[in-house]
Every structure is written in structure tokens, then in C-alpha cells.
Amino acid sequence: MNIITVKQLCKTYHMKGYDNEVLKNLDLNMEDGEFVAIMGPSGSGKSTLLYSVSGMDTIDSGSVEFNGREISSLKKNELSKVRLNEMGFIFQQMYMLKKLCVFDNIVLPAYQAGKDRNSVNARASELMDRLGISDIALREVSEVSGGQLQRACICRALINEPKVIFADEPTGALNSRSTNEVMQELRKINRDGTGIMMVTHSVKVAAQCDRVIYLVDGTIHGDVHLEKLENENDLPMRDRWLNQWLMDQGW
Ligand SMILES: Nc1ncnc2c1ncn2[C@@H]1O[C@H](COP(=O)(O)OP(=O)(O)O)[C@@H](O)[C@H]1O
Ligand SMILES: [Mg+2]
Image (tube, rainbow, N blue to C red; front, side, top):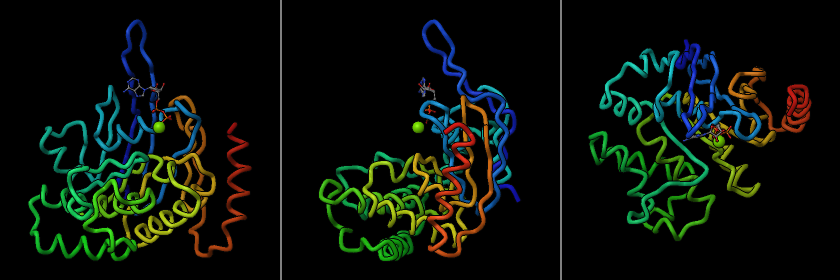
């Protein structure tokens, strides 16, 4: 089953004096539970694609179906509900409220969704435990490392048990050790059934996904399915293979 179906998606930014046509008649399907990497040169429209598909931004024409509903036909409050309950978001810049401690940031989307606070708190504790950050629960956002903060963002993205996590360069600001840790976690989350659509510049990161989409000038230039990654030892070979594939795409 497709969790996301994009048909003939067009998105233009209207600038002073000219129009910047960013996404051009883009077609894309994502299956339930898939782990998709979006790659492509800077400015090719990767972030715009993520924002369009997740309803963060409006589209000019075409359609985006998410979990059986046409996103652009939803009323504002219906869309907010879908975004809150069925989507999770992780960004390179880790947006957290500085006035709240890490734990309160994580539970906020679930409180907003009106969920039972006791079970939300229990789930947050369990998630923090799984991601190895229980000890920073009560710290201020400014007091924790980038890697810890990114793991806290993952907890927050998962708090409402979304169908899909949208991640825009989630490891872009991390060192290689934190990148590996975050990727291990994302893969676990994905194995447990959550779909992930992730923009990345890193071949090593993309090689750990099920599928890589290569965007050029707002259209899909290449789209390749990788085998399920069962064994860490396969990673260097996948890296090399993906490097070659990307070079063939003009990377
Ligand atoms: N909010 C915006 N307003 C106007 N132009 C934008 C906006 N966001 C992105 N763009 C332009 O759209 C194009 C694609 O941007 P983006 O989707 O961020 O690319 P990528 O994520 O692949 O680097 C770029 O030319 C960028 O300058
Ligand atoms: Mg971007």
C-alpha cells in the first residue's frame, strides 16, 4: 500500500520579477514503512519536496495523497491534525523551545494532541531510554550536545506514533559518531514500521536506506531500490555501489 502518492506536483516560488519553478510535474510513490533517501544538488528542490508532501507548504498544482487523504483538500485544522498525529518532523537545525526542558519539549506534541498525560509521559520515558538520553530529561535545551539534542528531536517526532517521519538533513550538523548513532536509531524505528522520508547529502547515510531518489532541477532523475540492509558488513559495498550510481546520475 502507498502511504504517499504524489502526482504531477508543481511548485513555483513567485519572486520579484521572475518565477522560480522548483518542482516540475513530479510523480512519486512511497510505500508504507519504506525508508527513502532524497538526494540531489543544492537547490534541486529536496526541501521543497519534503515541505510540499508534508503539507508544510502549499502546492500550485498536482496532488499529494497522504495515508489515503488528499492533503490540499483538507481544511487548515484538519491538516494540522494529520500533521500532528500522523507525521513526525526532524530537521538539521534542531528546533526546540528553549524555555522548556528536554522532556517537556518531547511530550509537547502529544499534550497538544490531547492525549492522556500519564501514558504520554510513560511513552516519552521509554523513548528516551531507547535512545539513550534518559539522563538529560530535565536539562535545558542549551545544556546538551548536538547528538543528544538530535536524539531528543527523534523522540519528539515519535511521540505521537506517526506513520511517516520527514527528516531534512537530520545528520547534517552532526559528527560521524553521532551520525552513526542517529542512523542506527532511525533504522530501528523504521524496522518497527515507521516510514521515513529523509533528505541527505551523505552517501553513507543514504546507503542505509531502502531506496534512493535523486532529484535534479525539480524532477526525479534517478530512483533506485536497495536491498534491505541486514548486515552492517554490507555497508562499505553499498557505499561504493551507491557512489557509482550517483556518479552515473551526474552527482
Ligand atoms: N521560501 C522560499 N521562497 C523562495 N524561494 C525559495 C524558498 N525556498 C526555497 N526556494 C528556492 O527554491 C529552490 C529549491 O530550494 P530547496 O528546496 O531548498 O532545495 P534543496 O533543499 O534541494 O537545496 C532554490 O532555488 C531556492 O532558492
Ligand atoms: Mg534543503
